[in-house]
Length: 165
Picture 1 (tube, rainbow, N blue to C red):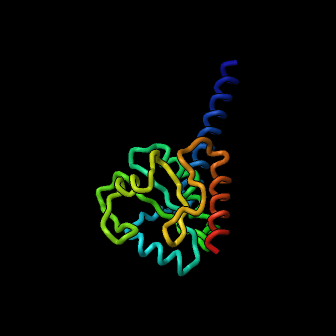
Picture 2: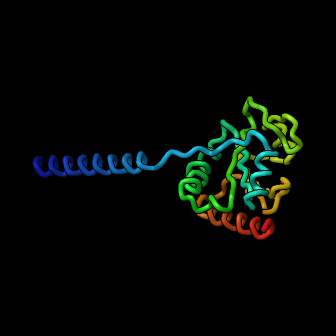
Picture 3: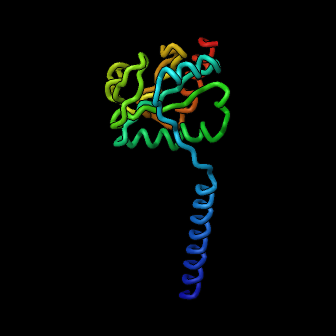
């Protein structure tokens, strides 16, 4: 009986080690991607116009755990897949960043002032803009359920592309 329990424990431990190793190997195999922060809205708008692309802008904060979740579970996989490269410029604005960016009018603006100007109340918020920096799809505010979030984003992208093209 003791020998059987020992064998079962060893088998369980081996299975856990193998499973953990496989999970780590899978995570390590994913290519690293970074979500590009907006530095200059005029350049971003010009790029969107020239390439006939939609701008998907994530408004986030460094202290926001939901922002990290949406980035890791949705935005980074979107970037890794390449499926959105021809249609969408995916960018990010951190509302608590110490760096100013060049706003819609070319003037320096902080992320927090930009968020206030865009009436952002919650992070994360995804907004979908045309090259004139106008919202063309319903914004996605917060994270209610990751199960449907991808579909909501795809719907917003389709709606935005219909308007800009």
